Length: 126
Image 1: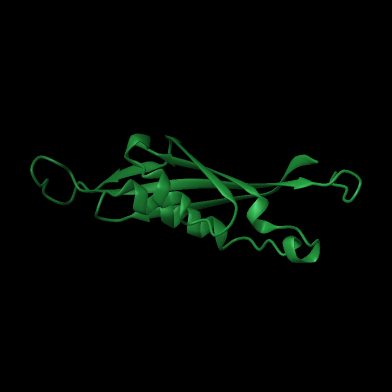
Image 2: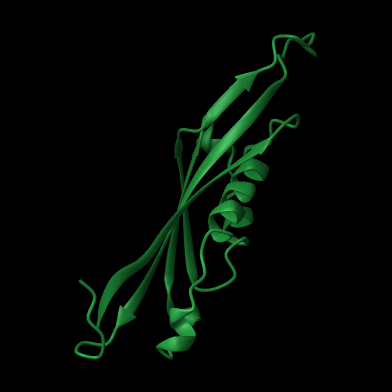
């Protein structure tokens, strides 16, 4: 068998006021999931829990991501979450800073890739 990527979906999510990168990341993953349907598992009689899912999150502070919370957004398979610097922080300069911190909206991006082992000779992917 050989592991093949069967889908790559992208999404964006934000936290408008809480500066919560994990919340934004979870919303980005949900956005990506709502763009896809993996009906091939039923059609091809494949075990959806046997897939490997790689989630890459882009935010301005990757260390602030709770990878377990983000992974919990994926309903099937073995999930690996990697956070990298990306996304956007959008400062709200119209509001008075609280304790010296300017309010900001955080925006996360997510790339969700799913891989499955395909039995040799049973299927052909180009």
